[in-house]
Length: 282
Image (cartoon, rainbow, N blue to C red; front, side, top):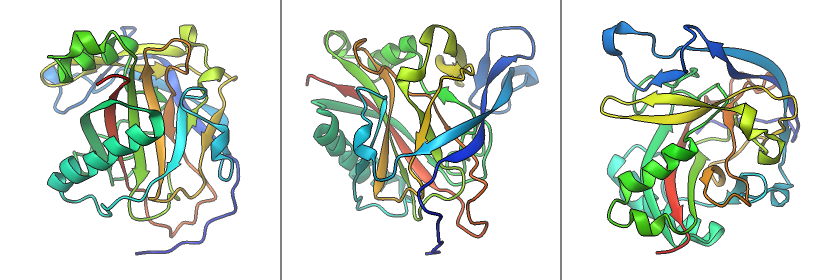
C-alpha cells in the first residue's frame, strides 16, 4: 500500500461547480446511462464555477452533527478493506453500515438501497461504469424531497405507509478505500448556510426504466463548506440527503473538489458510498 506525507490540517481555497443554467432552456436533466435515447446529450446543465474555501474540521469533528449541519464524521473500522467482492459488500459490509447507523444516529430500521464504488478519474457525472465511476465534481444532493418519499414506497412497499407516518431520513455512508484521501476529497455544505427556496434546483434523474429527481445547487456566497484533511478509511462521513423532520437539517449538498496542495504522487481517491433509508420506528 502506498504511503504519502500529507500537509497539516488546513482550509483549502478551491473552486466548486454549481448549477448555472440549461443549454436548451428546458428543465434540467441527467441521464444515468449511455447511449441516451435518440443520442440526446447526457445532461443539459451548463455549470458555473465559483471560488470557494473548504474548511478543515480535523480535530473538531464534534462541532458538527447531522441534525444541525446535515453531516457528521465518525470513526469506524470495517472488516472490509478492498471492496472488490460484491457479495461481501452487500452482505457483510451492509450489515456493518446498518449497525453503524443504529449506534450513531438512533436508527430503528435501516433499508439499504444501493451503493457506489469510485475508483476512476474525476468526472462531472461519474459515468465510467459501476466499478470505475470517478468522483463527482459538481455540487448536488442525491434526492429531492419528493424522490426521497418515493424511495420509501419503492424499497419498503409493504410497510411504506406506516413508515411514512414517522421520521424518515436518507443518509449516505461514505468512506475512503485503501488510502487516505489526497486527490478530490469530499466537501459537504452546512445546511444552515443554504437558502433552500432559491439554492435547490430540482433536476430530472433518468434511469433506463424509471425517473427520479435530484437537486442541483445554485451558487450562494453564504454557503460554508467542510471536509476532513487526509481522511482515512477508518473515518466515515455521514451525508444527509433527506430528513422529513423540518425542525432539523434536511440535507447537505456535497461535491468532490480539487486540493492543489495534494502530493502529486499520492494514490488517486477510491471510495464507497452506501445509500440508506433510515427510520425511527421498526
